Length: 347
Ligand SMILES: C[S@@+](CC[C@H](N)C(=O)[O-])C[C@H]1O[C@@H](n2cnc3c(N)ncnc32)[C@H](O)[C@@H]1O
Ligand SMILES: [Zn+2]
Image (tube, rainbow, N blue to C red; front, side, top):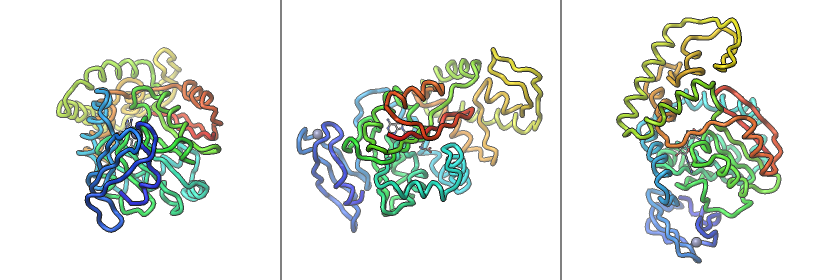
């Protein structure tokens, strides 16, 4: 944790000022210590260079985070590989309408305090840190921050924290850009978490989110049926199931066969057209992800990501637009794709 971070933190419980007791420091980096609230006296640890603000109050939360902690424990390396980072970056630029890194960096140059809510293993924090005059506060509730910190902790303007995005250790109206990609649908109530984040946005500040889109009705039905069982499985059991889904996805993919659907089938949410067999099954009937770059472990990780977290809500574009409207945000970019909805809004 950089010494500088202290200047920005407040108590996540009562939002009063905090004091930091340093036990171990290497140059400007605080490695061990504690953070104590001046007012309510709540106490948070700094261990292995990271301030830890997550409080285990609800079991639901712990289950979700345990799923992600074990996912990242196993899959952090394959998700920090260059081909995945490049693919995600390209996908990000497309979804949020920036198109090029240059456009996005131009936007970042207008920002000074950036929140990456649910950074995972930190790839997005790196991407958000292009403007060296801005501070990027990247948090995740799971142990993924340790991997993020190891890989990107040396970036001079990035701060990693282990925190719940629903209980932020920052003042209200503090961030001029909030980014929460593929995260909010994993919280107990996606809309409520979104509205909470907006309170931390400055006037004219921007917020970008991506949440899962509702899928075709049979896929939704199957997802509910399977997830109802998989969220109760042990990590080992769910990993085995996720592997089976990766094998299935791979076998279907290797068929390299296309099917033709002559007419729309509205009851199944199927549109007329030509489909690759794996894609057809994937989007309309069953999540069996297969990474086209042939990375088996990563495919297992993506399936696990879907089947293991306690919460993985899917939303309609209408719902998402309502959250923005109710939060008095003007939508500046909106893109719906089969998997999800990417939106940017301004306060
Ligand atoms: C699917 S990952 C996405 C990570 C990253 N944003 C990306 O796009 O690669 C979802 C992440 O959200 C985190 N998360 C879920 N609920 C959270 C919460 N309440 N507060 C902070 N992070 C949370 C999980 O721990 C997990 O790392
Ligand atoms: Zn306090």
